[in-house]
Image 1 (tube, rainbow, N blue to C red):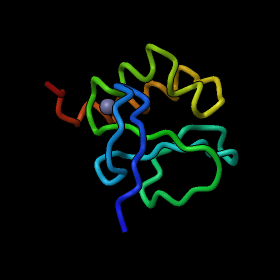
Image 2: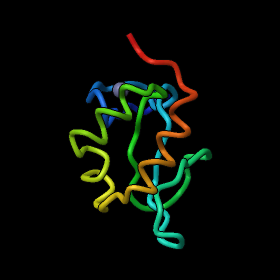
Image 3: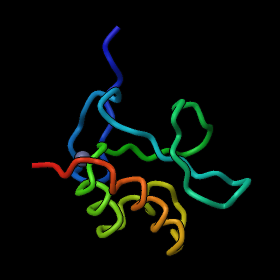
Length: 90
Ligand SMILES: [Zn+2]
């Protein structure tokens, strides 16, 4: 069976899901969270593990639009903290 293909909300490129990380909205906390197991219900956003993809996803509103949530400043700060450990893409 072929790998599922997902679109990165940052660069909009379609890639095998295995190359992307999943972000999901957690209604319990009202926060965006990293969906490590990729099994959280509800809407998820897929993203390359690259700081510039996260930056584009936030700047262009793709992340908020995909999750259908307004992202708060603390949310974005948390995401950036994680992404700061990622490599910057070419
Ligand atoms: Zn990307």
